[in-house]
Image 1: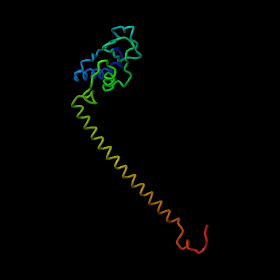
Image 2 (image 1 turned 135 degrees about the vertical axis):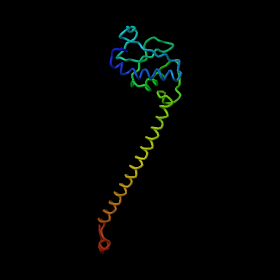
Image 3 (image 1 turned 180 degrees about the horizontal axis):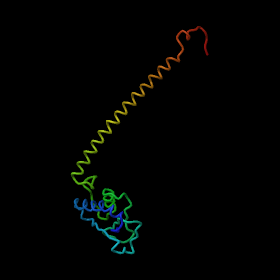
Amino acid sequence: YSASAQVTRDFWPYWKKTAERFHALKIDTLKIGRYDLSRNQLPDSIELDSLPSLIMFPAHDKSPPHKMFHGKAKVRPIMLWAQEVASIKFEFPNDTPHLDDEQRKAYLVQIKERDERVGAERAKKKAERIAQLKEEDAKKNQDATKNQPHQAEKLSGRDEL
């Protein structure tokens, strides 16, 4: 990163939260650090496309090519990427490693409320669609009845083709 770049300042809260979550989860097989390019020169073996950049240096082989993060610069995607590319594998306790216990509880309540609201909206739309289809069927039956010849016309006594 470069401390002087605005994009780095924008990214910093996500980076800090990522490091805090790994620490809180006691994942000690992953060492998290940062390298300020405004104060230090990049080693020749590392090529960056943009700043800030996330690079994984595997525990057992730090030689190129290095694994670069190319996802959405948010806490959860960064954590999942680190889990995927780390040479020393680790597991998260749940599917929301970026959330602490309190945040996870609030998140699960929000999901439940959303699902209930969406379910009610879908049920209402389904009932409206069924009513609409019944109306259309009734209109078709009514139109078909109007267009049928009367019984007297059918029994005219003539052959019909």
